[in-house]
Image 1 (cartoon, rainbow, N blue to C red):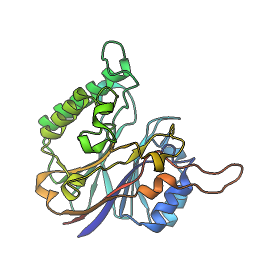
Image 2 (image 1 turned 180 degrees about the vertical axis):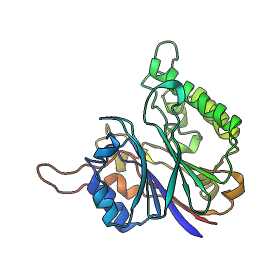
Image 3 (image 1 turned 90 degrees about the vertical axis):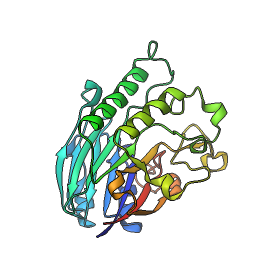
Image 4 (image 1 turned 60 degrees about the vertical axis):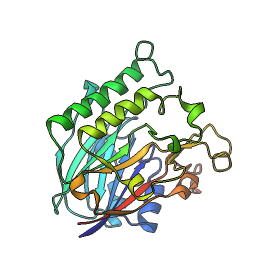
Length: 270
């Protein structure tokens, strides 16, 4: 069985619903994992997705922030939704495909602006969240699983536009990279994107603060696809759909602006 999976921080699924349609129409992944849906589950606009063949969904939602959803052409069954760090946030959902593969969709806390656990509660919560993920994977060793999502950390030097300039910027600090590595090691997760694209600068997020994001190209790879070793060799064709960062659609009463994230794809033959 071959299937393609994509992950995308959509930054409001209701506001950017037509952008999701565009992705589904043009790219047609079998499974799409969304983060930062910013919607209660019962308000997610499923009709347009179902009309495109995505008749299966599992999700967790919060009003106005957070939120994760898995849309699928293939039958899926909800497995669990973990509340790491005790935040009470909708940041994780897991579902199992009929071939036995479990897909974990994560939205790790961003961590605020100051990389100091004592001065910045959000940064402390981010590290605690990662520690709880790590401990869960140590206790419940994942098998035949894929982990995707906005992990809000760019771990490698070539995952950011300037390693030196971002060492003290939240998302690329050494302590975050260390915590993410511990989490990855705990589940023996393989970074599929970098398995398929081992070298070179690679980004999935560009700040809204940049007047011309494409020309400045000050990106970070915050969005990830990992897999357990038992299926990691079945993965291929990883890519980041950079063009989607520039998608803007005419609409009334105002245009639909792009997400600041681009979708990440991988295909698995199992």
